[in-house]
Image 1 (cartoon, rainbow, N blue to C red):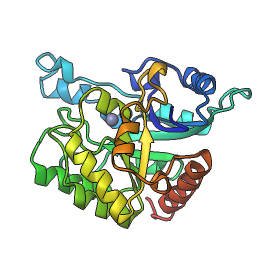
Image 2 (cartoon, rainbow, N blue to C red):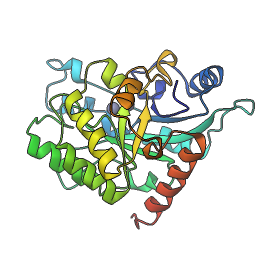
Image 3 (tube, rainbow, N blue to C red):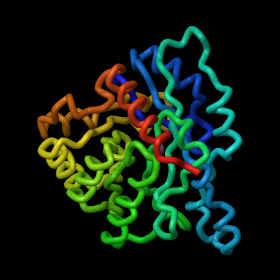
Image 4 (cartoon, rainbow, N blue to C red):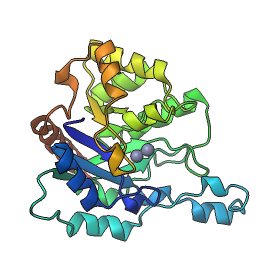
Length: 266
Ligand SMILES: [Zn+2]
Ligand SMILES: [Zn+2]
């Protein structure tokens, strides 16, 4: 079980099963010390794009809805867990890396300084990311690292995997962590050879790694059954795991929040 889980989804994401409170209470039952609830960025909602492009019927399986900006604002400004809950709640967001255009991600910049944790990930969906061209994938992930984000989520999605060495080097430069995502491995969505390469390079060059379940239901929260064998296989050092303990998690989050605030966001 993860000590702190840096990536999970509540029902606000539309395709996840539990409320934030259910996730927190489950964390308490399992002895998980903290969870970052990182629902999808409003930009994941591509239903309007599909409709506008008359693809809604043909591509219904690619239609996905997320929370809107007002939900995220209320979550940030008003939501507090019940007092008896022990697990610490970090308020996060998982934004999308976009395949083209001047914006590398769809993170609403007005919220960037208020969040505890910002994940940027490729989600292969129409209007968000469709190309499998490795040069473009690498270019867009590297560009996303210039945005106020803290983690690259499931960095090696099958067919959409960037160059591991360029990724690791830029992550070090930007003090961003790369994610080891349990669900993307259990669902066989990860290019494992690139992930192992990422871990080996991170160990050699000193890149930070974050562990997460990417749970979409309480039964997945804190799961690390696919993560642990990889950490053991690569003899990965604990010092480079940003959320190894609750203390290191808070330190990482405070450091990243400061960096995001200083990015002079408009
Ligand atoms: Zn994701
Ligand atoms: Zn996710």
